Length: 74
Picture 1 (tube, helix red, strand yellow):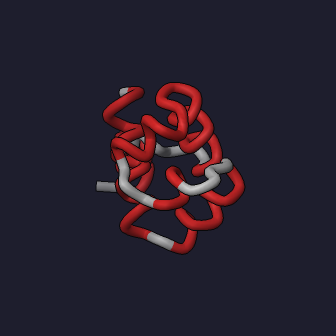
Picture 2 (cartoon, rainbow, N blue to C red; picture 1 turned 30 degrees about the vertical axis):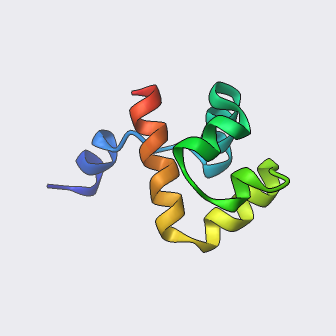
C-alpha cells in the first residue's frame, strides 16, 4: 500500500494537534476531557498551550487524545 492511500485512510491526516485539542475541549470542556483521559494537563490549571506542550512530549497521552478525537468526530 502506498503512503498516499494510507494517508487518505488516516482520519487525522491534515489535522494539527492544536485543532484536535481545541475541538475536543470545545465539545467536552476541560472537566469532560479529564474524565475521559486522566492526565494532569486536563485537570490542573488546563490550557490549550500547556496541553499541547505536554502532549507533544508524551506519546502515550497524545495517542489517547487522538483516539478520542477520531471516535468523537468520525
